[in-house]
Image (cartoon, rainbow, N blue to C red; front, side, top):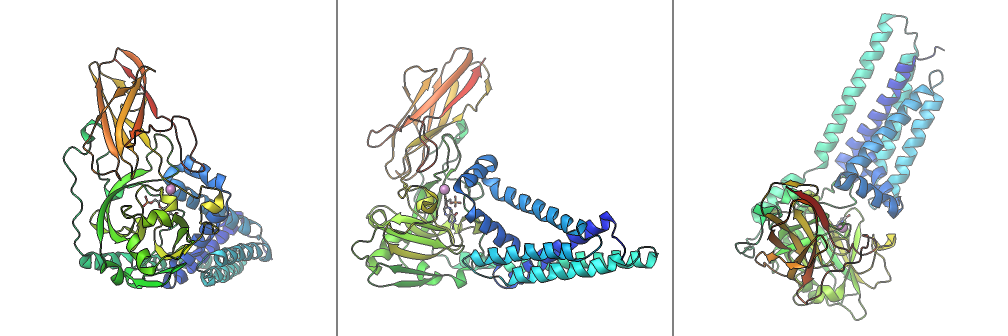
Length: 498
Ligand SMILES: Nc1nc2c(c(=O)[nH]1)N[C@H]1C(S)=C(S)[C@@H](COP(=O)(O)O)O[C@H]1N2
Ligand SMILES: [Mo]
């Protein structure tokens, strides 16, 4: 038996691993895209890592955390594939065994997922071992003759092309959401958005625009790839501690009484001064209507909403039943069907509650239950209740800015969803609090912009801001991190005046 060259051995490992992933991805595309092996393994990984690791990943990579995970996985897989090749320069067994073992990890990961589809992972395993064994045999015929060398290269090339086609076909088959969104857009009932008065933002001074463009709306979720759910296939059950279960299709939903609301959504992981906060107009069915129709039984405490990928959030029933809370099962965002990343076809939004306890995307199930059951983030130590904390942020001047001579305009945002903002105050270099000018209030469920023009002496300055909610309560000044129920503390920034 001849020994494979290092390069050829490594190439065989890489091609086998690539073909395995592509074949699994192809099979998943014809069934459930979430069962594609790298997706299932990544998703299982995300759900299994201790919460601290996830915090760290978000802190390091922000909303690019998923991209970072995918790149990390690709590197690990490539390293294992090369190891499989190099470990098999003579006998096929060590490398084939390593690929089979890795395939079994994929099968096991798939079985831990809610969709329980292990077929693609099994196909990956078989294709990986098969391609590896085949190329290994071809590659080992003495590479002395030019014919053999060509045959090996041609076969490898064909396998690579085949794998590429399989991967692309799998991705193409796996979507179908775009056409569903188009179909939905054509039949969405027209519900006029609440008017936005003039002067609702100070965008000219550097605050965000009052409404966040959908593509700029922050995105946070545990989904490694965006779940692909068609409105035509969508159903949702409202069940648990209710008198009558409801089972709704998308058509049932859009034919009910609808409301349009402008809501500022915020993430509990938003650090002081962070940007995990955005505002959009949502149209949907009032959750209260659904709960009243189903008839909530005494003793019920929370509504656990579950997404198609198994994520869940627990929202206090008491909050959802408040007559003026305005919680929605939303299907429209800024005049369009929800984008896939923001929960198409249906998500929940609840003014005044952090997203982790309320804003379930790709929502498919709603169960009325007690607090004995723990939703996704509660199982990982986050607080049961997640009212959004009153906060404020300085957007201008930017940190470390060098400003020209003349007056300085400070500007930023403040929020106290479902209570409203009464005032924002600004303090320069530890001096007295000064009252900032507020933009026109749109509603108590949305952020409020502020600005203040000051004459400051040349040199370095440090400014802080603080919000006071509509009940007269100032935001908490004590510094606290985001765990377990949202950060507190004052945002500050420093800059230099000429
Ligand atoms: N299915 C699903 N829904 C989810 C999440 C998730 O991980 N999975 N994350 C929640 C969190 S923590 C937040 S802050 C909001 C963010 O919604 P957005 O991505 O539309 O801004 O979605 C919520 N809904
Ligand atoms: Mo969040």
